[in-house]
Image 1: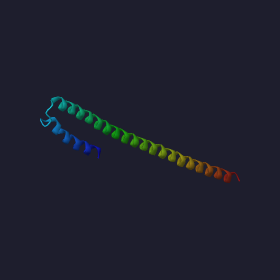
Image 2: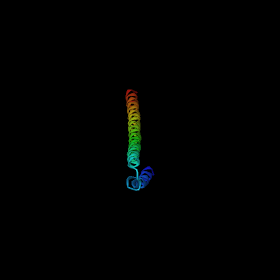
Image 3: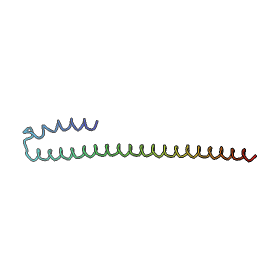
Length: 95
């Protein structure tokens, strides 16, 4: 919505760069206002992209560590089960 609004505003501002505005200094000032507007829109888009990237990286990192922790828990549980079975088997052999 922000980019569409900028496009509409820039089309309206094009008339201000023509001879429709008789004073040259006014046209010059409107040109700088347009440049400022372009930088503001560019900055807003970069912040949006950067924020989205940071959120994606955070979610990917969180998923990675969650899977890693889950794998460790499963591995530890299987190791404990194997040790218990070995202990059970060794007690059966002794008796």
